[in-house]
Amino acid sequence: MMFGSINSSGAIIDGIEKGEANDILLPNQSGRVQKVAVDIGGSLAKVVYLTSGPHSEGGRLHFTAFETDNVEKCATFIRSLLRTSETRGMESHSADGVSDTDDAASDNAPVVVATGGGAHRFRDLLQRELGAEIRIEDEMESLTAGLNFLMREVADEVFTYSEDRPMQFVTTAAGDMFPYMLVNIGSGVSIIKVTGEGAYERISGTSLGGGTLWGLLHLLTGVQSFDAMLEMTKTGDNTKVDMMVGDIYGSNYDKIGLKATNIAATMAGVYRKSLGKQYSDADIARSLLYMVSNNIGQIAYLNAQLHGIRRIYFGGYFIRGHPLTMHTLSYAINFWSKGEMSALFLRHEGFLGATGAFFVDEQKQQRDAATVVSSSAASSPVSG
Image (cartoon, rainbow, N blue to C red):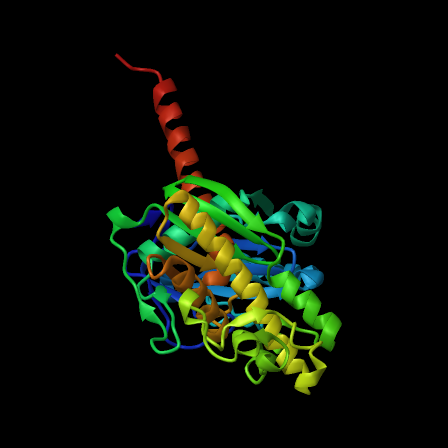
């Protein structure tokens, strides 16, 4: 499919693990696109950009991220991309600032497309630091456009997840894409109902999101980075912190479908001194991850039930392909819906907004160019 000057037909995910997300290869792309898209959220700034292969044949979408508190570092990186694009047509430039190939300069001026709340907050900074045209795209439009692009154009992008069947890829026919619900988990959570191309509505959300987990864990454990927090959860034992169904009933509560290992009350096991429990920072981290993920999963289910939607896509940088997070969200949707709904994930879940902004801008520029041509043709004098 063509998106302006970008040919996405045959798009596949590069098998080489690289940075925050694997590159997406566009084997049929021809020509350079001098554009960088950035989605600046409350916690992270996500960047998507396209590089060309030798002689401008083939393309590669790259993905990287920076903490919003270090947005100047993000701007410096984008500036290095723009400088490379002015001299080498943005040829295979990586996050370490090294360009892989030399080529002729392009006549097109590079553009930065920005979305997310930070696109407005930091617009003046971006303009000052980059000296390039800054185009702002709507956040919700970008998120849904990014998801539509990835599920429709990129092979092996969407998958389901469970502990016994991790990463089962899902293909959705073009006629069956809609309706769906997107639960975008960033610092907070937005829940969006999508009924068609460009047809979307933010129907709900919650302030308890990735920023909540990050903030609480920093206060309680002193850990400094989100990656470090996720790493801690791998070794934690939440049963030393939480009150489980088995702590109350001594076994399963089969009549209402609760297992002894289900969480009855988050953190409530701490005050039961008679249990003599000892807990670590990792135990706290695992408990809080379950708390936030289960809460998001239940809110997602309730909204899907209210709107009659069966497919729920979870996006946002909070997920990060983290098995425990995906399992918890999947379990919550399956439990509450009694298996009637599907929790779906993406390999580029953290970059929906930046990806969408990139392609929305391409389509808008294509429409504008077509309008100019049409207007010019209509106003041309007729000889006779």
